[in-house]
Image (tube, rainbow, N blue to C red; front, side):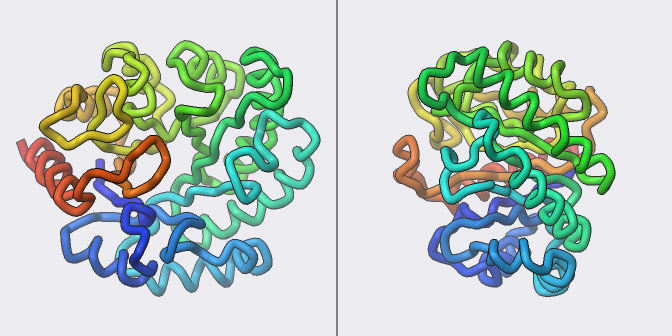
Length: 272
């Protein structure tokens, strides 16, 4: 396994600055996306994906470990639980996959969708599964793993529902952030059942009621998590994802200090 960091962890830094910081602190990859000062030019990505992908790969001092793609301008716009956008989402996603291939990113992650209108969770899951199937097939053709991130405020907020989605969409992977389940009170062993579908991971400490916590104030056992990943045969990237955002009140931690704690913990575990 290799350790990367999310570019959106440092919202006031440009992409080049995040890359320089990540290299300086010993990270092994950089997750990139469309947010804050480090944002990619999404319009250009969709207009000339191969050219832009090669440019980004040459520009950054670390490998591109993952792309976070959002179909619309928010988690709600063109989300996967809305059936009306499947054709345009697939058309865009083929360009996204071409970018990933040119940039050297082994994975791309997307969100599962939300409850739209009067949908039930089951109906939202049905729509998402149908939306995902052609996207995953396109990813397989391109050699890129397509990952979905279950998250708070989507409808995909339980390990059991997440496992059901995975069984219904052959080939789909997860961008697994234990914090999105721990905040709702799920125990770590209840989240571990999702490891067979692991394609990418986000790392930050959490506890019931807190999506993000200081390393010493959370309930997640990271050495046990890493060991479970390794035992499953996972050898991809795990990304430190401490953030400074309004989302779920994740604005109170020193991102750099918590990132360094996670780095030290991971490298010590890997060396042991």
